[in-house]
Every structure is written in C-alpha cells, then in structure tokens.
Length: 341
Image (cartoon, rainbow, N blue to C red; front, side, top):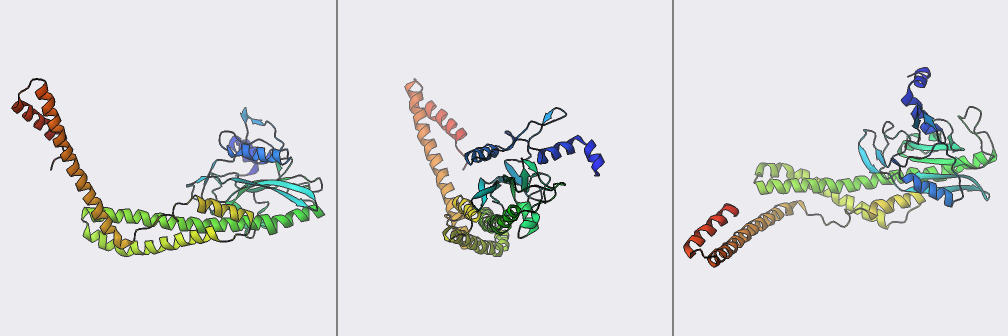
C-alpha cells in the first residue's frame, strides 16, 4: 500500500499513531502497562503521555497481555517486564523496559503489531520498528522481543529525519551497551527459552502418546499397540532427555540478568522435572491395573445396591407393607438403579 492510500485509511493511521506518538498503554489490553509505569516512577523516570484521538477514538499503544507466534497461534501471557537503567560515567543515558522472551520464537507482526524493542525520545518513537535490529547478534532476533528504551540524556538526539542518532560520545556509549550487553543478554535468553520449551514439549508429547497407548491396551487394540510401540519408545527417550536438560538448567550457574530470569521462570513453573515418567513397557501393566480398579468399583456399586435394597425393605415394612411386597418393590428399584452386569 502506498503512503497516500495509507494516509486515507483510518485504521492504518490509528496503528501508525499508536506506535509512534506519545500515547499511554491500554488499561484493557495491556494490564502489564501499569507495572511499567510504576517501575518508571520508582526510578524517577517520567514517561510523557498525551491524549490523542483519531476520528473520536482515543489512541493507546498496541501492546497486549498475550503474544502470538509467526503462525498467529497464541503462545500465552507476556513475560514479566524487566526494567533497566542504562548509565555511563555516573550519568543516566536512558531507561527501558523489556518483556522476558519466554517462548523463544518470532512473534507475528499482525497480532503483535508493537513487537520488537523500540527507541523513543520524549516517548516519540525514533525510526521504524527495525531501527534497533542491527544492534542484535542476529537482526531477526529483535522480532522475538517487546520493549521500549526512553532516551533521557540531552546529548543523545535523533537526526532531522528521525531515522538515526546524531553522532555524540554518549550516543556511542549507549549503542555499545545495547549491542554488547543488553541485546546480547536478551538474545541468549531467547535461545535458552527455545531450548527449555522444546524440552518441556518433549515431556508433554510423550505423556499424550502414553495415554493414547493405554487407551489402546484397554480397548484390546493389539495391532495398534504393536504399531505404536517404537514411536512411544523414541518419545520416551526424548522426554527423559528433556527432563534432564531442564534439571541441568535449573542447577547450573547462569550469566546474564535476562537469561537468569528466563531460566528461573521456565524451570520454576515446570512440573515436567518432578514427574516420574512411566516407561513404555509399563503401559500395559498400568492399563490392567486401571481395569481392575474399574471392576472393583463396579462390584462396590452392586454391593451398595444390595445394602440400599435392605434399607428400602425396612422402610416399607415399617410403613406397614408386608415383607414379600416390600422385597419385590425394593428389588425392582435396585434393578432400575444398578448397572447391568
């Protein structure tokens, strides 16, 4: 779409203003925003915000509380915001917030329109969404991220076209910290998140396949069981390897603030490391035990039915009914409510 048509398209204008202009976070779609605002205030940083309306619609930033992958599948809630002050020689150059890249995958632009780390001066965005791509170890990895950096130093300014920074010693110090410290740490965190998510997924896949195998055993589907055994054994090996990888990550020393936080979240919330996985050759035994429990439960129901029948007889006899009629009626009631044999 050319620029002229974009300017005539109301939705395109709204999206552009929402990303570029100094507008507030949405209280409805991005509740994490209040945490960021609070952290900024605690750090002595004032984020300039203005009320902007387009055709009567109040514009807010496009961040959301959930994120989506490149296929627009919902991944889950956003990671916790991590706030950082970027200082040099005792002077604060900038302050930023960064959402932990908990999923380690590229985010869909269509459903995460405000993805990538953005650089702002006076809360007005500098350049387009790819402005900071070159400062990452891999340019594409900025697409895994969400966050904003607010320039605070009067010596770091955008050029006239707002597509680059004016050359200054402080601008060089800032970009050096972004390239060599913050963005490298975020990049490592995204890779670690991808690794740990794959490990967790291996455990989940095995558990799903195991439950399916148990169903086949209970149903007596011998051919299906034999066909799926090799696949289940391979899934078990991957699941065990996944558990070991998660345990190792949880106990290993970690470099980098973002990596440490990602590892803490993904290993701390994971139940996959504490689950003792049933071996593939135990599936048939477990299924047999399940069947025995079901049969025992059935017997218990019938026994309970007989006890109920005796209670009914006593109640009817106490009300004046003769014993034989009471017995026949109780038996009829018991046959109606008891499971068929």
